[in-house]
Amino acid sequence: MKKVFLYLYPIKEFMKFFQFRNDKMYDELNIPRPLPILNEAIDKRYRSKGYEIVFVLYPDRELFGLDKYEEDKIIYTDITFEEASAIDERGNVKKDFIPKYPNESLLIEQLGTIDELVVGGFHAMDCVKRVAEVALEYGINTLVDLDLTDLFFSLYKEKDYFDVENYNPDKFKLRMTSKYGEINIDLGERIFDRNYSSPVYGFTKSSGKKL
Image 1 (cartoon, one colour):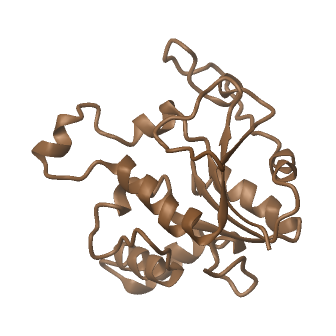
Image 2 (image 1 turned 180 degrees about the vertical axis):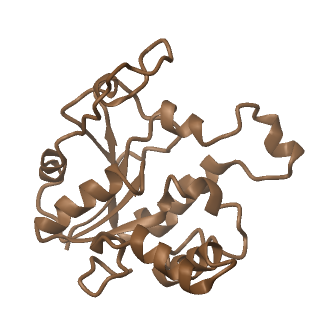
């Protein structure tokens, strides 16, 4: 049985966006640096459990921040980062920009025949969700590991929550509904259900893979 952990777009532009610009701030605030923990989580949750690790890159960008083992694989999108980004090379917002997405089917087809797929990377509510939903349409047992999406950069700091070795969707739901429902628990549950209604998140009756 072939299992794949697919990480979308580990490039400098995304990785740096979610980190302190001044690296010394991690020491000053006594906060662990995120990338070593992210690498450890990918290894312990997936690589060490028999999953093939596949990174998805834009053809005009290089892998940044994540460890690539010899057995890991890189696949590429059919569009460049410059085509996908709302920001031009000078850092200006493009006028009348219309988002352009990679062809999700072409990404899934590059994986070959697989039985199980877990998706992480950038971004949980957008590209990650889109790719995972196409995989589910292909009949692949699919789940988004929300801990290892862009949400990771806030979640990993929570020692009582983040488990480097395992993803627990029920624990994620409890954490998020508690956050949303600090004033009203019913409101928190409604917000959660709205945000995570896609079956690829694993919270609906017709859901994807369960870890």
